[in-house]
Length: 231
Ligand SMILES: O=C(O)CCC(=O)C(=O)O
Image (cartoon, rainbow, N blue to C red; front, side):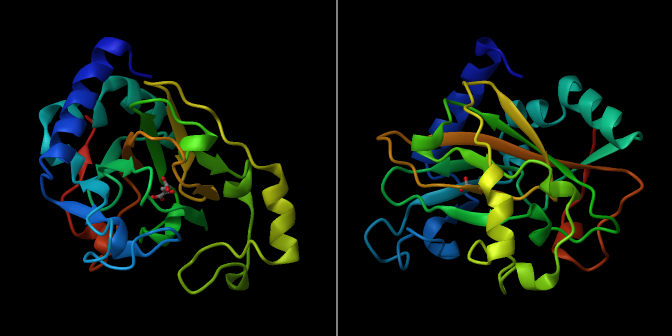
């Protein structure tokens, strides 16, 4: 998706901003996913999970978010003009070796409130992503499956402990991503990610898109920031 010469500045800026702890940040301790420090005061409590609002952090991130290569795929899928949301994702995700947490099975729809459940995310690997450093795992075809509310827990994580759900998770795929590779996935796709067992922080740049006829619900977090038209 992004060649080496385009990837270098993305990596340089992401790493410099993490080193400078440039706000706004989200911490592992804030989310309390499995493996996260128990509080910001605990050992590893200052471990960053997301460099938030990547779009506004640097024009190089903004240029990637709105690049013609992304726009053309999105217009082909949505069949109309496309907007990028700044309300969630829109971040550099960092996964740290020791205190980075695992993310349980979920649909990203848990984050979104739109008229229609039709959004697509683009996850760009700034370095190699594989099983051992916490790469994403997907349940293929799950974006078309219907589940009842009981399939998810209160936090809207998929109940992998239920026998009927466990069957779906037998077919998972975890694509190995080389630096500059991207995964496009629908907000209905069940996915998860493990911990980072390597000794290096993993960096990924993530943005989410929707068609212009699909609006964020008034008063929801999804409508909390101005959206970015891709044309
Ligand atoms: O890198 C991870 O732990 C998974 C992130 C993820 O799935 C999400 O933020 O929705």
